[in-house]
Length: 84
Image 1 (cartoon, rainbow, N blue to C red):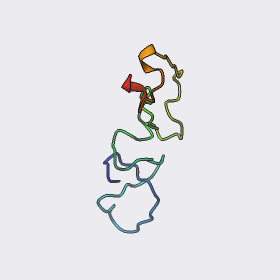
Image 2 (image 1 turned 30 degrees about the horizontal axis):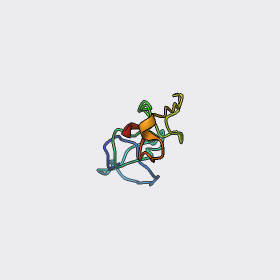
Image 3 (image 1 turned 45 degrees about the vertical axis):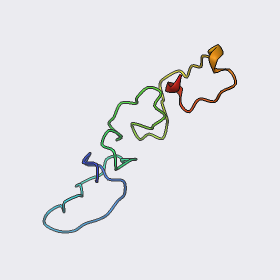
Image 4 (image 1 turned 60 degrees about the vertical axis):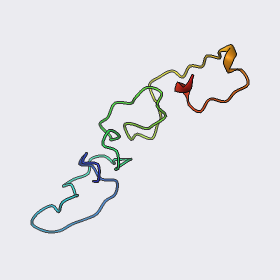
């Protein structure tokens, strides 16, 4: 649990009287990006960021993908949707 969200990315069984630092007691959902606390199973999906914010395997679910072409954009490739 590197990001402090208290949900690790893998399962390790530990035996002892106390939970070692960096481990959690139970895993109810898998933290798909253990390096970023804002990406976790309880997070709300963020609109059009291209990231699986809630670790359910889908990007930007619940939002209709829209595309508008501006004359100045014809013939160029955008690096991201927010680079308009």
